[in-house]
Image (tube, rainbow, N blue to C red; front, side):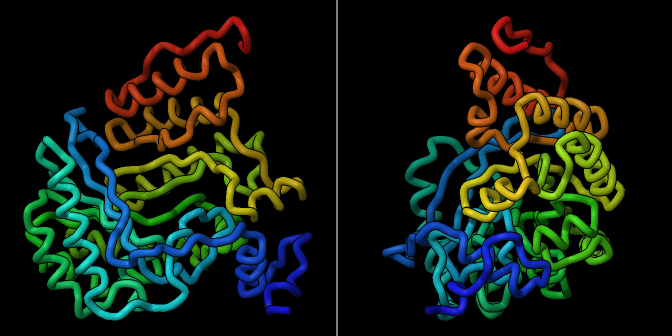
Amino acid sequence: MGEEDSIPLNPAPSQPALRSQWVRALRPPITRPDDKAQANTLIEQEWTIEGNPIQTAVVFLINRECPWNCVMCDLWQHTTPNTLPPRHAVLQLKNALKKIAASSPQPVERIKLYNSGSFFDRRAIHPQDYQAIADALQGFDSVVVESHPRLIDQRVGEFARRLKPSLEVAMGLECADDTVLRQLNKRFQLRDYEEAANRLKHDGIAHRAFIMIQPPFVDPAQAQQSCMKTITYALDQGAAQLSLIPARPGAGALEALQAQGAFSPPTMHTIERCFEEGLNQAQGRLHIDTWDLHTFNPCPTCNQSRVDRLTQMNRLQTMLPAIHCPSCS
């Protein structure tokens, strides 16, 4: 019997190390990548503050699993159990750029280089590969990478100076509440986020914040208030863009927390209110993750129209008339 087999599944342990084991024990079977040289890619559209479309490539590099094991994370699939050798990320990136060039009829201006963890995790992306990665990215206008706040150090500025494109760092803020961050197993406090944001600002590097709508351990009745507090906090820390992500189960831990009464998925009504009020605070800087958004609304009458409305609001960055549904209003 392995170490994680002995972890009690109810309730969630309070100690960070045990909570990480608890999160891993609840996951469904992991799918390891067959070809570690081929990163997943997709093309999506983002928008400038002025509402202009930007063709954006997203590359999901394969490397070791993130060591933090946040309770809501679903990025642990398609990772490796161990650190891959130097140049692995460079090879994946070059292969991905060939696929992007072949599949996109329009010029791609922005690239998001995501890796199921932190770009500045030395055991995920080898620092000696930064120059080769920067060289491969010279054809883009901007580059977005993701990092845990506690890994923001001098290497970020050094990598930015190697790039011709501008660098933006995305950080998972989730909730501006230290107690909730501890329960989520984020392994940082708000002061760590502030220090990271200040260092990025000092180095002239923009950052975007990921914010959860109704995360675990937040009373659903307080979800909108919590979201607005977090949006205000992120803006105060200088976030150039904010991404709202509705909390969704799927990796095991959130289902367990839901059974314990510590989590419930947000309703479409809550998602709409958070985005609407957030746009008033962060005009031109707030977007909502529309992936699987239809799963939050059980009403077949208005489901698609509500998703379409939020998608349009993403693009226009302005309020659109509310949906009045005769079936569920």
